[in-house]
View: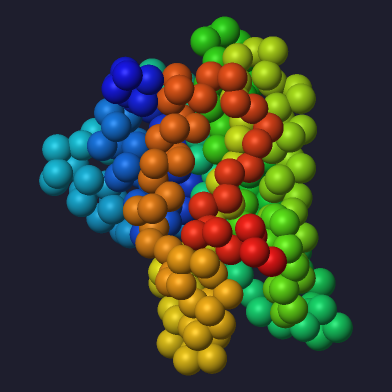
Length: 255
């Protein structure tokens, strides 16, 4: 049974993984046996994160590049090709948040959120899938959605549009790549204790709302997403495709 979840011999690229949810997912995949490639925009933080995993005995690489820049992404994959690094699993985790009412939102800020949270997933997955298809060995694509893939909230319109797009992009990937033994799925985290959410946690009214509206009556932890990520990366999910699994403590169940 444990072999169903064994990632030994596989290489996983996790975008936006120098900290937070991305780092937790990378560490979880490494614990399951995968070699992980950490990514971020700063070389120093990416190298530091990779070093933390290596110090625990895991196999970790690091590469800093902007996931919204298609040329930078293509260059990264081309270099891995030269180095003999085969990406078997992609976790499109990179994301940003920007809070402002839609009537006050500048187009540049809208575009920045869409590019980082949605377009980057297309760019990275496309490069990976081309190689997976050519190799004929299949692969795994995991996109990170959100509760806002399903339900909107005020002041996060661009984020909501992007994460709703992630759900449908995942289905589109499944429609086109399933025949090549590529499983494309998504994870929809609930309210998770991360650096990005720190201002919300410290807002007493919002913190109380999260706890009162969630059947679990608490925030989630980054490591609580790991099991779902390992499952979707592993042979255990070989016939699961085009799905989004919400890890939210039951929040969507009671809306």
